[in-house]
Amino acid sequence: MQRFWGAMLVFSLVSAAGVQAEELSEFPRTAAIIDVLVSEHEFDAIEVEAWFAQGEYIARNVESLAKPAETTKTYAEYRPLFVSDETVENGKRFMEQQARWLSLAEQRTGVPGEVIAAIMGVETRYGNFLGVHRTFDALATLAVTEGRRADYFQRELINFLLISRDQSFDPLSVKGSYAGAMGYPQFMPSSYLAYADDLDGDGNIDIWSDPVDAIGSIARYLDEHGWQSDEPIATRAHVSGEYRQVELNSFNRDRTLAEVAAQGWDPLVSSSDDAQVHPIRLDGDDGAEFWLGYRNFWVISRYNRSIAYSMAIFQLSEALRLAQ
Ligand SMILES: [Ca+2]
Image 1 (cartoon, helix red, strand yellow):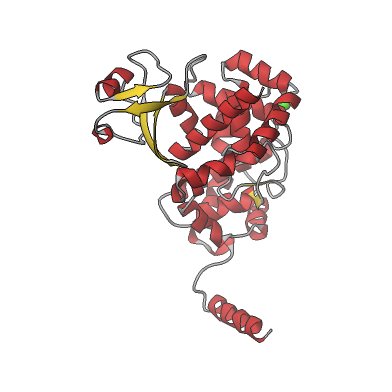
Image 2 (cartoon, rainbow, N blue to C red):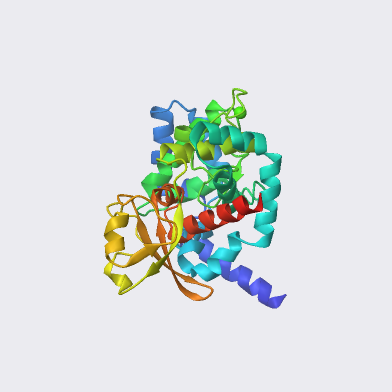
């Protein structure tokens, strides 16, 4: 108990000294954001100020943004978080429950149901974990924190408030990820505005409580980023010679299958000579693994620009396809 009170005292002294602002309204960027909302988007000043007064600054979210799991773990550590007997079993059940809508989305976009389901599985455990942070707090925290991404999060915060006005919900009522990703598909507000889809046709686009619209939205997102129907996503490759001759684990789109084949990369699942490829080396359970990502792998990476993330989506989708 004594130690507890000691810790409380230190905390109080630090706060009183004003070492760091703890209220959203104390940050210099806040007044400018409120001004944009009022002058450019005709929000009511008193209402906006009340949101910032009731919202919370979440200091640890700023740290979380700097070190997401896909950049701090090897692939052998990362993969089982998302590809396991449990995630495949739950995904199979999700696909059975949503078979009609997955099929409709696939008809419209060419994106296979198992890829849509895999994204939902990795993002939110098929809708069972939508995030614990109020979206307003998450976005406002990152928007008021000085840094190279502050302007990006300011735009996302404004987009979020525009969506809440359009869809008539209280912006303080919605929860999501620490970085402001929302609902079943974990869309950032700008992605909602650009790609969200009313798959069930009821006139609302609800990605927060409706898996059907989320399915349509994920399919549309991949489609509009260039998904190619009936083309492979990625394949294991055998590499003869010096694999470092090609740039590894990059999303540069200027390599073709013919070029990397000439440098000793031999894919298990082939494609056309001029197919876009991404040579990949991962640290798997049994050491180095070599892969070639195709165009559809790059399309998946538009969801999250990470090799580990995109590979986990591909491998979960393959497991779900085989489990059908
Ligand atoms: Ca709808």
